[in-house]
Image (tube, rainbow, N blue to C red; front, top):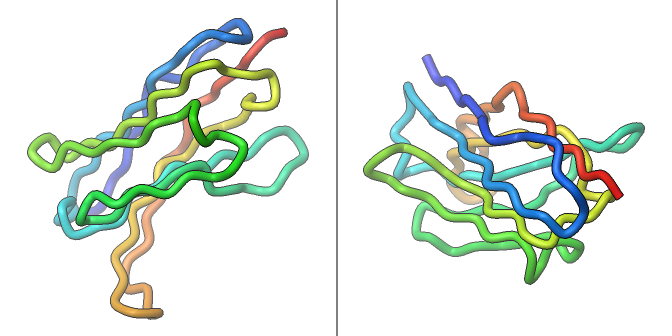
Length: 120
């Protein structure tokens, strides 16, 4: 059974840093694209960053240059280093694991989320 468990969320002042981690189990981690999504108050869930099984990364424009996604296939973890945090980064951050071939998604798993709150 697939399971994603996030950790690292906290209350931090603007300009500060946090590192989120997601531990995966029950999947062939190295074969999955891993992503971080967030959902702020009264907002839709949005992609923050993702990393393919080959290690290619993609970032949403609002976080480019401030956030870094990385993965450790030996430990089945994906991390999100967040620097220069802003109040608008406040959200619940969710880890996602997806396995697809072409346009077909075969597996799509989500974690419960971890709260990040940035005070001004």
